[in-house]
Length: 154
Image 1: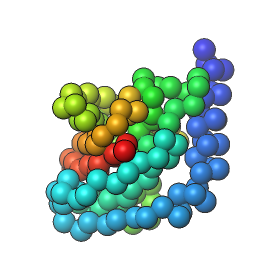
Image 2 (image 1 turned 90 degrees about the horizontal axis):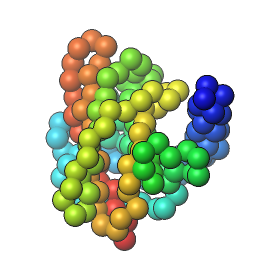
Image 3 (image 1 turned 30 degrees about the horizontal axis):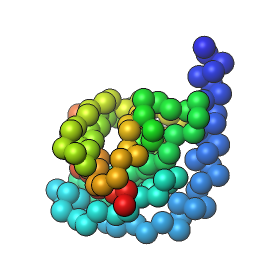
């Protein structure tokens, strides 16, 4: 069990390293005021990768969705991954919960688990339509922050 978990973590890390040059080409949107991230037009996701960055209360938050590879499913068809940075440095020891509102109106909430610099969990995001991805996180200093993005499958 420990070996399987270690292999899964190393595979995810390798996937993230390989995808970094591709991520640099993604279009980034920045919002400077609290709450604006919920009022933007949805962005279309690809079956393989999606990345949006948002400013949430002075934190740079990366929302990353990737189709789960066989054997790497963490509770769904896709892995939702979140990275939180401030002043160019990753913020560690964050407590973070996520919520997805599916195109049909159903919703699901899950805590995110730490995987290197990212926090992640799996959701079933293969359904066509717009998914709302939301997070609520608490920093080590005790402040609470929330925000989100839209992920759409045409």
